[in-house]
Length: 563
Image (tube, rainbow, N blue to C red; front, side):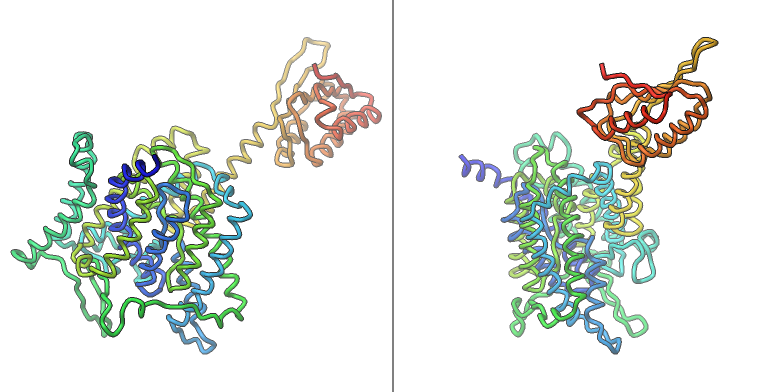
């Protein structure tokens, strides 16, 4: 039965794996570029993320590979480890040292999986996870528009808002609009039209077209259009161009660019291995620990997000995922690859392309290995504008208008953390976006706790009797509620009657006991009668002993048993 299910889903998983491979390829190269690492390191990480992590993972639709969220940490670490005492920087020496940190990070992740730390991901609010998805989607759109228009001095992009060339995400788009390439724009528009067409219901109902992924047709169309432009309109065709400015060679690449191994240096000669002598440097352990925590956090959030996107709503075993990611990072680092995490861009592309099981992720790793090793010339025929069109559509699905409407409808406590997460991701990076969104979400949680822990009701009595105020205490009254309670008690009039209703209360912090005791002293001088109602002796012996103590000290205190 299981084999039948495997074969039944393979017709969906293989085409989806091919599309994910096409999406992953420029990302692998771009993240390597942004990380300041050898380009082939990104390819290795993509292959390991697909084959090794995909096999060990329990995620049905998650796809792993090098992550943009780690690019800044990787780049800073390589620079730190590759700079000697004289201030001279050696990129390869820094990268070889960094690979040791990658092995350490992987081992820590395996340990985190063993101690069942995967549950951490479930403590992140939905608003932050949705903000992360939308933030990544908007970043994808901003970073892919230059490729779509055929203009970018950094072919696979820099994922930070402020780029090392002095531009930012918006100014780069401005340059692209002023210097767009007609051939690239044509391929982008045709590709987007194909992608939209294949999403229509009548196409999905067709037996033939339902089996063919739209992104694959878009890529084939992009290749064909560009080859026709080369043959008949060479001025409009896309190439990999180089120009020398002030003695420096700048690239304006419009095509995928993979170096083929030559007879003197086959692909195994492009592998880089860790420099274990760096183990004597204490900073390597700090870098390894930092990467392990950030990579694990990014993975767990992507797992949560991917499970939400899964049409079948399957649940990924998070502890197993940490083990798979840790193993992948150890293997990747041992052979010269970048660190890997589960990545929402690849995962959402997998879901969008109709992937059903983990075979889609695994097959994408095999496609990446096969094409890069055997047919790099074919990959080099793919225009970046075509891949940009695919990523633009992925980005829009992650940050669609409907999601923003839904979050607004859910109220400010959901919308504000959501929008803060997006803004910080777009203008800073993924890690700070998650931290900022979580901080705002926690603020709203505390605010809700502050408001809900106490409820007061004023009852005005007839002349000659005391006005009555009922203060109902929530399940937990902590030091966060101290200010609110103090304000309410200070507003009580002289000669009034105040009732503390503890029928719902299960816990009170020591700070609250001290506040109530101070209030009792003040109540004596104001002739305020105090009554405690509904406090259960089984719930809080400390509270009951407190009330008994108050009754002994002050003659204006009464108590009634819970009903």
